[in-house]
Length: 318
Image (cartoon, rainbow, N blue to C red; front, top):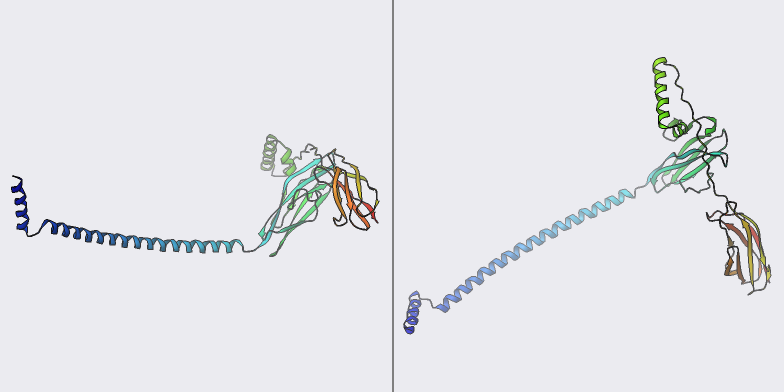
């Protein structure tokens, strides 16, 4: 039975004229050819896609580079300065100093950043490069002038400040406009009082069509404690005559009227004397390095870094 089946299969294959081995080879070749074509098509498609992406990326990079270069050029273009003065604090009356003070800020633009010079600053730079304080005595009026300057030119602004104790408002004049206000009255009057005054003024103007009167309200005194500079009363060296290689100590005496902690500040040439150590906040020991007659500057400083007067100490090295 087994032999018959095997023979029958061989006969069927002979009728087709193709042996099983040949059919397998042809099928393999056909599959290989088809797979090769598909692979080639896929590789070609992937290569074209990659080139397209690279081209788009390159174009985007060029656009970004151009945009960055243009932005940089625009940003660094110089501009002429402008300046405007504004009151950011005051007018305030300080009973302790018997002055009415204003604090004014200079608002500037320009490239490069302008340098601002004020005609007066009673705070001596305490509030920064663009802010000043003006202290006014009774009935005093002062015109503050500020100039902003850079490589492209300069611009000037002014503001008129008036002591408020005389019942007069503040008149400000800038380079662009002139403004008159009653800032002190508006600042110290309550919201209800301001509303009542305005309503009354409007009623008077409408009914009589004559003069509108605004009542000035005297502000309450504001007590402000200003930092005062320390005072150096004495300074000396012990000994004051030494030989090269010897040591000596300098001392400072003083006080701070506000009760702040103080320390001594010593000015000297490091080639002449070498600092060995500080004995305290008011004394220091040095070593003499070379022959000659020398001077050491002594002053004291408080916690707010306010400096005192200065005293020179003479040292003779022989």
